[in-house]
Length: 266
Image 1 (tube, rainbow, N blue to C red):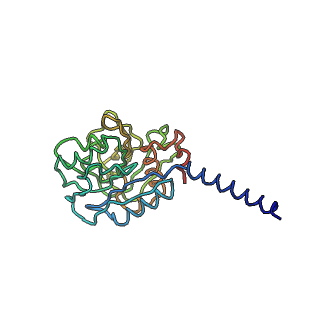
Image 2: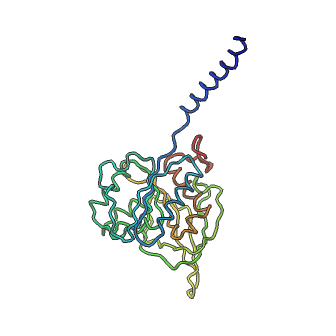
Image 3: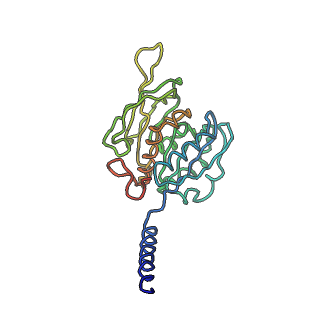
């Protein structure tokens, strides 16, 4: 009887040991900080849409840094703390605080990215922190000063070879804001362009709407898209796929085939 009992116990022991080793070797999820709040958008809803969408698509855990303030001058106190970004693998800037213009405060944000913390910038982040100097736009990789009406945007992927866009199909949004391009950085790689009917004027507006570049002395990876004003866009599977790939690429966890590297697919 003892011999018969020992066999299943030994098997269970070996299986348990194997599972423990497998669990120990499995990569930890990417820890992402999503910063939201400020003027002009339904951030209370969008922060949850983005969190759930990212966590559904990849081995990612999203934490929120959020304010319900609807103005343009809210300052996140966390940004002034030393090493504020140190616990995170990627920071997503999705705040809308164009009225915050103190250079020292903006430098405290940028120092984290200069030191190598990867970043993703969404929509109104392009119009934040207008200090009268180019420091924020140098980080973004593109300078924008405004946008057109809320109308559908035809998205065309300019590069199908980049891992972020490989295999993605062109599509047309619901009502969205097309941000203009005042200046595109020398090291910026456009990934997608957006065209929007100008109404009574001939032709269409045409702007870069998604791009990547490397920032600062450590060549920190930064992905940005100016899309994302309305909830319908933020909740669109195609938008969430694009942003998820941007996060993975920034963290160095996206393969050349456009798929998450081992351990980071959901």
